[in-house]
Length: 350
Image (cartoon, rainbow, N blue to C red; front, side, top):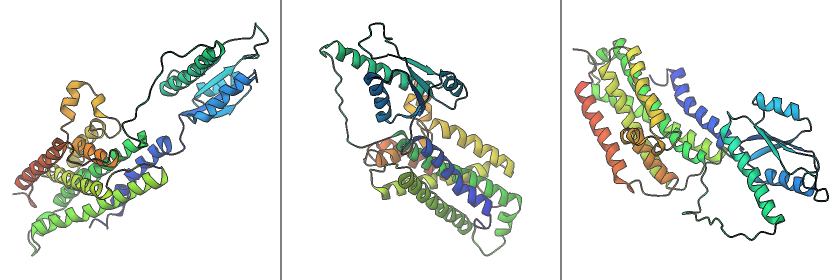
């Protein structure tokens, strides 16, 4: 029955892959913050040094242009992230009247790129000022990394997409499918056959677990081998945690299908459950950045502790029981949903 619905099966697998590719193109390997045009009207050693530093940083894709107005228009149209204008004679120390300013043109709406570009140019010019004045450095910054692992934002979000895929396909898939079966009287007819109802439910659960397993494989293969995501922990533990989450979300789907009467209602309730968890459980950003009162609530959502365990294993190579609270929360959600679904779910209405 699951395979026969080819469109549903296709989107169950395609939906998380779309997210994986979108974030991979933006934050995966060989990605930059944006394109920056450098208009070097000076062509001095100092201006060349600034251009080289911008290029070597690999923060931006560097273009060269001579027309300032065209570059400004490109920024206005959002086809260019910023413009660095180096005026004529800048860095020519034989001419006292030579300009001392570098102009950075940007769109305030693109705050991340603007802040990075301004900071980089300012840091370069400050270092040049110290060097020209033979100033002795007094205060310096010392970096101390707690680990030597290379981690990026894409590594963080890859684990989130994994949890998101399992949540969406399981909750929406189960709740809508069971409601549809009930509307079409399929569940009621099963009660009149020699097939035990619990066998049908287990078959539904295990068939969707197979789909979940395929989802996990596709996401990790695409994320790691195409977009250079990093997995530092035990991959088998990650699979176990992911399948544990799949079971949890399927049980939530059964709870929803037991509370509604129609497919449309199941679709609406499932969406109302999954959308808040998508944005408030740490899929795309750490939830500890949320206001304290909101964090105190959302940290108990079923997806949040699951993602914390997956990231602890995948990114920090820790045990999933490093923080037992996360494991206990997931188990409590599983037990609670199992009790409610066992109590409320029926193959046929009374």
